[in-house]
Image (cartoon, rainbow, N blue to C red; front, side, top):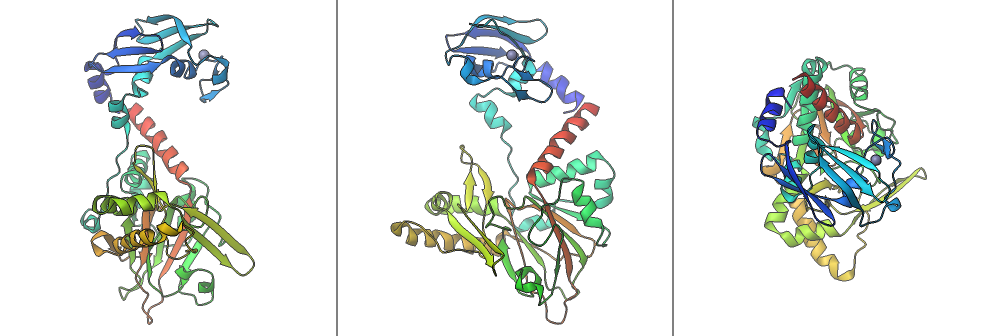
Length: 395
Ligand SMILES: [Zn+2]
């Protein structure tokens, strides 16, 4: 947040305590902008971050919720002139201090929870005219460029980085600057080239087209952020990359056929990857994962590694009807971004939201070479929060 924005918020009284009221289980806080927050005493006591309750620097807590009664009450509540609320608790006389700004930022009223909810920008094939993209030198150039890349990934779940030197050494170091590379059964860097030998292991190395899918659906925790770096492009226009926004597909289905959507949120699809006697990975998951508010959290879609459906008899037919609708949507050109990757292009996307695939690779032209690696989502979001904070302090 800029200093200007902060000043504006203060002038509107968002963080200005005007008064508090109590009943027997909660504290009502009235703010300068007219908003009223409700904080339950048990919540306030639980969220004391003093040195007795834990380590305020790291947010690690020693306080245990079972050490206080559920109906804990304050002995004294005091709004201080330094814009804090100070509470002394019964029965142990523990003293807690709550900064007004912190309280407002954690207010759990319906309006404030709704305001804090991040709203991803859903997209369809028209995104081709306004791609989320950034130049490599801008990302390397400083925090602002790096943050823009991370914001694109948060909003669109995909970002194209241009002018990345098409050398094999480039990707590894860049991806590692975000977090440790994930190890797979192919190692932490994977070459996607047409290779009849290795295509025994991965269909990515064949010439076949691949319909959009999320990667490694058969794992407990599929890779989070995936990088594809184009070292060498096909010059016959074959082997184009395809991307589909899984959240968009989900919302289209929710609109058009809510029963189908509900089935795909409720019942698990099994996935399995096995070959020779070295690998037998299995995991089952609903296609769409939702949070308690019904917002999309993740998608898991792959027709590359299906296992037999294992559902109640009466669900089989409606489920197949729903699943067919889903499969029609993911191959519907209205929702598909098709991109011929050029040498020096890097695409980064969130595998928990974006489906990727490619068109078939021409027989006469097998020069296409992509490098692949992945990093956990946690590191990306961690970097984004840190950079947002750093940049806002600098104004
Ligand atoms: Zn405390």
